[in-house]
Length: 186
View 1 (cartoon, rainbow, N blue to C red):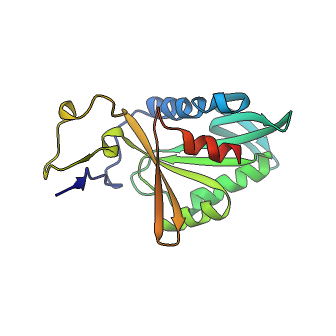
View 2: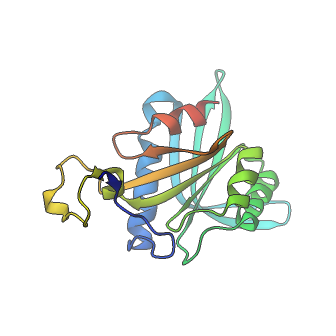
């Protein structure tokens, strides 16, 4: 019997806010080689028409010989799945600050309405999980981490996207930021 090690949104990964945001910034920085003048600023304050916003991370890079792209990144550490309203608020912050893209990372997943709204508006949603959830085992019981291969990442991200058959999920990790690279370059 093959099974995937279970991940449960109601019991999100135990990670400190600092370690969580540092890992997210690390994934963003891993895309640097593909983009021109790439930078990530942690906890940046941006001005918008309705006031100032403290953003968990702001990524910037250039395209077409000097046009700057600004990406707002929010890290949500909640007890329940992120709702559509959170994505709507990020979309509003993007519009108010003149930003081009947005990403929300969550330790507890996303509700279907949030995923659909994000897909319609080009916002990326990534669920932050223990890297062990990227490994599939044949065991009927949980396998101790010490029995797993050494190359399993400490943390990973699951990126859901609506498809004709339901959801397609891509994985992000310290050694696999290809989907993030492609999305940023669009």
